[in-house]
Image 1 (spheres, rainbow, N blue to C red):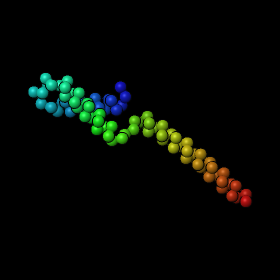
Image 2: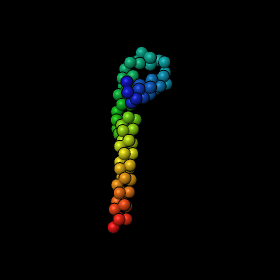
Image 3: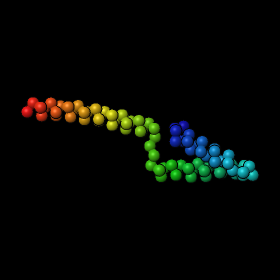
Image 4: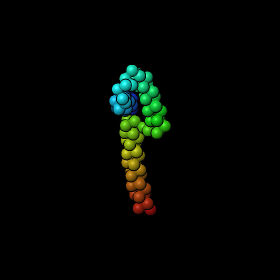
Length: 81
C-alpha cells in the first residue's frame, strides 16, 4: 500500500469512527463511499507523492550544480578576454 492509499484508508477509518454506532450495519457501504469520495478529492488536488518530490528535488540540485559550473566557466572565459 503506498502512502496515498494509506492516507485514504486512515482518513476513511477516522471518518467512519465519527459516525453514530447505529450506522454500523452500513459500515462496508460507507467505507466504499468514503474511500471513493476521498480518492476523488485527493486526485483533484493535483498532489505528488513524496518519492516524486524527492526525485524532482534531486534533479533540481543537479541542475543548480551544473549551472554554477557553467557560470564559473563563463566567468573564466570572460576574464581571459
